[in-house]
Image (cartoon, rainbow, N blue to C red; front, top):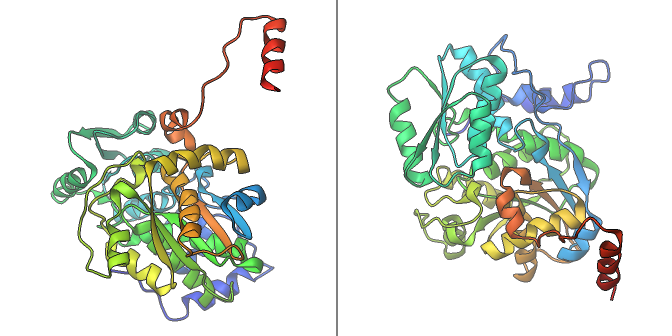
Length: 381
């Protein structure tokens, strides 16, 4: 299921964005003509969207591409791209008179929903699988959400949430259940299109779990093209963890998608039963894009590589997108003459344990100048 707007909505958007008499704030709500906003509805107060894009020249050289940009969506209120659909979910929940918002999540959708619900005083109930990282669970509790940690994997946790919510007067934020939420995710594509309108990249890269984010990002670029913001839609690269790569397998084999195993250090994309598989596969196909799988070893290595080559701290699922560029280069999908934009979907502080496992520890020294100087001398030889 997809959300369709009146035929001239994108034209109205293009005209509004080019109106110098009525400038709009650079946040996700600047695209209101192509968002499902009930009349009179007020967005939650937290600034969402408008995240920066950085050109990373040293990272481009390391990965073997001509130019590379990072869209740092870890700068959103709860530190992930998922703030975009969650802000929209809270707006729609309030407009509908729902008594509570609910979702199942490996962590980021949950923490973002709890964050935006807290900003307006709306109760939130969250279901997380047993392996959800503690920092993400901490966010949930700090924001005051009711949290059920389910002794199951994400797939079964999602099903339990759906079963419970079906019998309650609640607003279900799960994107695969609620197509309106993909509309929030597409704003990352609309924004990136505006930010790189003069240098539209050849490729846009996102990591993929359920498939909703990449489907939304493609739609955002398509609408930006229809609105006259960009001259063409880039190709999209979907990146999955090798231990949870059912969409990659379907693309490579040409066979119908079916659920697969799920095992990865990247909790946000550790999904065996993608909830929007067809929408994701169709969106990447429309862009003439491709899919790759990356190992956990490559994902962990990409965390310090992104940090040291660009100054952007990515959680494992976000770093997977960077690792995917290298795999795509190795497989000949992306060439050295092409340009790439990578969506960094979540901040590394979401999962510091994984980051620490990817780097060496500090140097322990006594509180003594000579001891430090001795070490510095040794480290330069």
